[in-house]
Length: 191
Image (cartoon, rainbow, N blue to C red; front, side, top):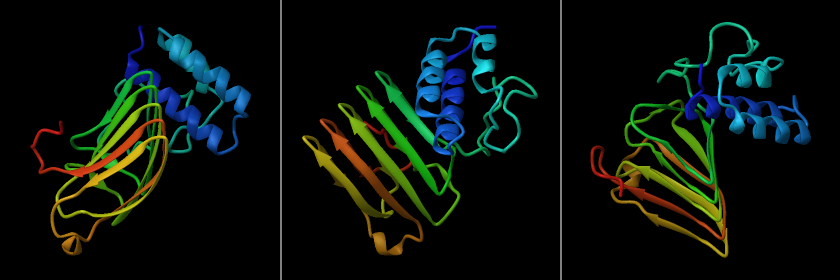
């Protein structure tokens, strides 16, 4: 069966997690991530993670295929746009730490209808020659610790932040790119 972009992205997420945990060297990670984005079928994707645990700690190579295995109750930890666009929006779970990376691409992290796993979440934004937008509901408490080098960080959040029990910490950097943080009502167009 042919793999979709979502299938390749799920494999890439597991590979990034394994590299961060020290299960893969940087060279192994580079080789496997390149193969993941070249893969056209499930049979090409499966061997890339067969020796790694999945997000639950179980062996990723066992059980059913990854197709359709992501649900709203399973929090993702990353969103990546490399020469492409990545988006998290609607009803999705946000773990206490979530990272997004845009390289020659873009991304949108929309928290307006998201389920946050903690009262304080950290969104790590890395924009290199690309752009990332973080959309929050009005009144959300924002702490912005993003840095920019030959780029910019914009912040336009409406509402009384002192009333909100939820705090969103934005960290990371923009290099020749940008990070935009703004608020919109749920249902309001994000453009």
